Length: 117
Image (cartoon, rainbow, N blue to C red; front, side, top):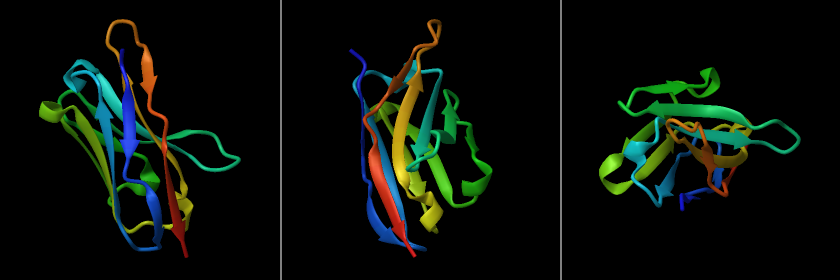
Protein backbone atom coordinates (compact mmCIF):
# COMPACT_ATOMS: atom_id res chain seq x y z
CA UNK A 1 0.00 0.00 0.00
CA UNK A 2 1.37 3.36 -1.02
CA UNK A 3 1.40 5.98 1.70
CA UNK A 4 2.85 9.47 1.72
CA UNK A 5 3.23 11.31 5.02
CA UNK A 6 4.13 15.00 5.21
CA UNK A 7 5.71 16.74 8.16
CA UNK A 8 7.53 19.94 8.99
CA UNK A 9 4.74 22.49 8.77
CA UNK A 10 4.27 25.19 11.36
CA UNK A 11 3.69 28.85 12.09
CA UNK A 12 6.42 31.32 11.21
CA UNK A 13 6.84 35.02 10.54
CA UNK A 14 7.40 36.51 7.13
CA UNK A 15 10.96 36.07 5.94
CA UNK A 16 11.57 32.91 7.92
CA UNK A 17 12.13 29.39 6.62
CA UNK A 18 10.61 25.94 6.89
CA UNK A 19 11.57 22.59 5.47
CA UNK A 20 8.78 20.16 4.65
CA UNK A 21 9.37 16.44 4.41
CA UNK A 22 7.40 13.73 2.65
CA UNK A 23 8.06 10.13 3.64
CA UNK A 24 6.97 7.40 1.25
CA UNK A 25 6.12 3.80 2.13
CA UNK A 26 7.54 2.64 -1.21
CA UNK A 27 10.65 3.37 -3.21
CA UNK A 28 10.16 6.87 -4.54
CA UNK A 29 12.42 6.05 -7.46
CA UNK A 30 9.38 4.21 -8.79
CA UNK A 31 7.32 7.37 -9.10
CA UNK A 32 7.70 9.08 -12.44
CA UNK A 33 7.33 12.46 -10.79
CA UNK A 34 6.80 13.80 -7.31
CA UNK A 35 5.12 17.08 -6.50
CA UNK A 36 4.35 19.50 -3.75
CA UNK A 37 0.94 21.17 -3.94
CA UNK A 38 -0.72 23.66 -1.65
CA UNK A 39 -4.25 24.75 -0.94
CA UNK A 40 -5.13 28.01 0.77
CA UNK A 41 -8.55 28.54 2.36
CA UNK A 42 -11.17 29.17 -0.29
CA UNK A 43 -8.75 28.54 -3.13
CA UNK A 44 -8.03 25.69 -5.49
CA UNK A 45 -5.15 23.35 -4.90
CA UNK A 46 -2.13 24.45 -6.91
CA UNK A 47 1.18 22.88 -7.79
CA UNK A 48 4.17 24.45 -6.08
CA UNK A 49 7.11 22.36 -7.24
CA UNK A 50 7.81 19.20 -9.17
CA UNK A 51 10.81 16.91 -9.36
CA UNK A 52 11.12 14.17 -11.94
CA UNK A 53 12.85 10.84 -11.64
CA UNK A 54 16.09 12.41 -12.83
CA UNK A 55 15.96 15.04 -10.12
CA UNK A 56 15.10 17.92 -12.44
CA UNK A 57 12.93 20.46 -10.60
CA UNK A 58 10.33 22.90 -11.82
CA UNK A 59 8.64 25.60 -9.77
CA UNK A 60 5.63 27.79 -9.66
CA UNK A 61 6.72 31.28 -10.68
CA UNK A 62 5.71 32.80 -7.34
CA UNK A 63 8.06 30.53 -5.39
CA UNK A 64 10.99 30.30 -7.79
CA UNK A 65 14.19 31.38 -6.12
CA UNK A 66 12.70 30.90 -2.65
CA UNK A 67 11.69 27.23 -2.59
CA UNK A 68 13.78 24.16 -3.37
CA UNK A 69 12.40 20.68 -4.02
CA UNK A 70 14.62 17.65 -3.70
CA UNK A 71 14.28 13.91 -3.55
CA UNK A 72 16.35 11.41 -1.57
CA UNK A 73 15.77 8.11 -3.31
CA UNK A 74 17.90 6.18 -0.82
CA UNK A 75 15.63 7.16 2.07
CA UNK A 76 12.37 7.48 0.12
CA UNK A 77 11.99 11.11 1.05
CA UNK A 78 10.99 14.26 -0.81
CA UNK A 79 11.67 17.68 0.64
CA UNK A 80 10.50 21.22 0.10
CA UNK A 81 12.80 23.82 1.55
CA UNK A 82 11.03 27.16 1.80
CA UNK A 83 12.94 30.36 2.40
CA UNK A 84 11.77 33.95 2.51
CA UNK A 85 8.25 32.88 3.38
CA UNK A 86 5.43 35.33 2.72
CA UNK A 87 1.91 35.51 4.16
CA UNK A 88 0.57 34.45 0.76
CA UNK A 89 2.43 31.14 1.17
CA UNK A 90 0.01 30.22 3.96
CA UNK A 91 -1.72 26.98 2.98
CA UNK A 92 -1.94 23.28 3.59
CA UNK A 93 0.93 21.68 1.71
CA UNK A 94 0.53 18.25 0.14
CA UNK A 95 2.99 15.81 -1.30
CA UNK A 96 1.97 13.59 -4.17
CA UNK A 97 3.49 11.02 -6.43
CA UNK A 98 2.48 9.79 -9.86
CA UNK A 99 2.75 6.07 -10.46
CA UNK A 100 4.10 5.27 -13.91
CA UNK A 101 2.00 3.21 -16.29
CA UNK A 102 -1.32 3.60 -14.45
CA UNK A 103 -0.92 7.32 -13.84
CA UNK A 104 -2.38 6.82 -10.38
CA UNK A 105 -1.75 9.81 -8.15
CA UNK A 106 -1.09 9.21 -4.48
CA UNK A 107 -1.57 12.03 -1.95
CA UNK A 108 -0.43 12.64 1.57
CA UNK A 109 -2.70 14.10 4.24
CA UNK A 110 -1.09 17.54 4.17
CA UNK A 111 0.77 19.76 6.60
CA UNK A 112 -0.25 23.30 7.57
CA UNK A 113 2.05 26.22 6.91
CA UNK A 114 1.06 29.57 8.37
CA UNK A 115 3.07 32.72 7.70
CA UNK A 116 2.26 35.87 9.61
CA UNK A 117 3.20 39.36 8.50
